[in-house]
Image (cartoon, rainbow, N blue to C red):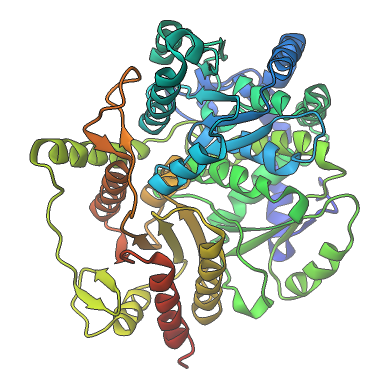
Length: 567
């Protein structure tokens, strides 16, 4: 019998995983993945056969390194030290991971990732690069991502008004698939360069393609070393010598046994890995009534504060043994625990490949296609309808709050006397295996992070349910698929606020005039997502924080602490 790796402490589930591992070894599952056998995930090849380029992208990109290095040298020689990546989801999360992990490189540019339509965030980025030579990377696989194109129109129209069309284009590059509308747009607006990606790679699997490596080279990351690390993972997976196969089997088997809340405890030096792997797992597995919920950024507590639906993944870096010590109480409490030790920061290349491979394996055993996202379009369509209605009438459909309290307004499906009873009823509707999601259509700020962390901790400790946090609309391109495609156990609390300052989205890049604003786009996306969740029978509540969201959120936190302190 095949023995489990020392990094897997699965308790009573271990023998079942061992049996499956032996079976798939005998049935050549890994060989069939490398051969591109689409029948492992579905009956038709669409969105499978043309999504397996990630298996060899690290190898194929080696021939592009010298061109990328020449591109970087030209940027540095022109005195450009600031880069803004305009993207969403798969186009932004790997660059953000690289930026957060390797930010101390001496010769690299400063990279800002813009993936929020909140007008104050857009204004903040615009102010940070104002008057500084800045390169803008317009990054979208499809070429039609509404947020990315809105960012482009906003920044290009500003630069064009300052320096003219041809000069403005020198400060823009595109990353997209061949034949996309962005390829033509880049040519028309005289972009410095257009990087055409391998179209056989899905967004969340694109870290080792142009989508991840163009920003990485500008950060002065040793891309060769990163790709060699990914190659190590690929080589081990192809030879069934690493843990990627075992990891995928384990994730699927535990999810089928009700252990579907994959809780990450990550060394702070590579904390950006959490948001990247969150999209990979959630968007890949959350469909057809199943799914694995990644839990990222939840403060670690005592074992008794977690339900029996948890799996813990500890990621120490550089041989740090303190995480193994921290994991002991969880192993003793019979929680499954997986260790993913990272030798150094460049070892993340191997780690990222392993998780992509494991996710593909898990998809096979869960009976789903890990490369599509069938429910993502629903929220997009509803947001488009909301924006069209706004354009036609000048306003959104009117909504009446269920109640108003202090400075906040509450929108729920039942009438309550106060916010405390409303929240108590909301959590009273939880089912076995439920989880709690905060959808924050707010500007991403440090001041909010601590407040949300306290809310999450209070809910987890009181109700023993998993908690997650996503900023909108960013999470729509990440966990949004799982929220609508899984078994329906989520409790969704949406936070919105007024925008004291709004910014016009130009109708096209050659003008500064527009019929929509970033605030309107954000509001339409929030409404569209809420409607999409409700149409799927999900439990959704909205709290509008008004003109002063920090004060409103402080008040809401107090109410949370009140209801969660009750016995």
